[in-house]
Length: 148
Image (cartoon, rainbow, N blue to C red; front, side):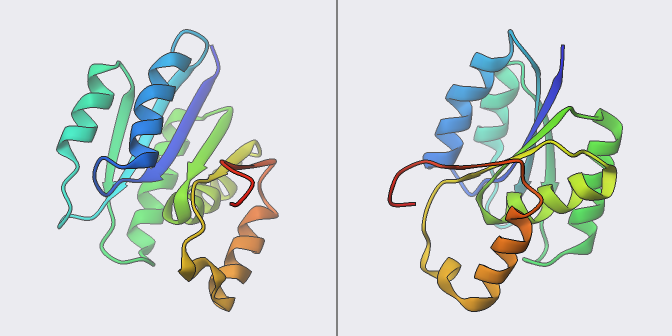
């Protein structure tokens, strides 16, 4: 069974988190699913982590100290080295940044990114440039709506 690792930053129980809670258990019969959950220590996501675990999803929680945190990148890369996934699927900006970079570092060439929203900060030039740079490494980019 092929291994798929999803990478996302969770901040509570909102749209993306609910989406993964529905999607990941449904994929378990076809793939070995793991989820790297990035989180801020000031915003605990224990309920979300426990719900994923209760669905038999392997969970790897990794704290983020800052938006740009080399330790977080090293930790995500360590998980990918250990799991050696066939596919890495990222969600939201932090999942994209850390997941795509870690996949590149560890040699995973099959990367899918899902764009869940169109936040105003994404329109700023540095973020637009970063998004384009990251998108160049992605095999498939999924937008959840025509608007996004």
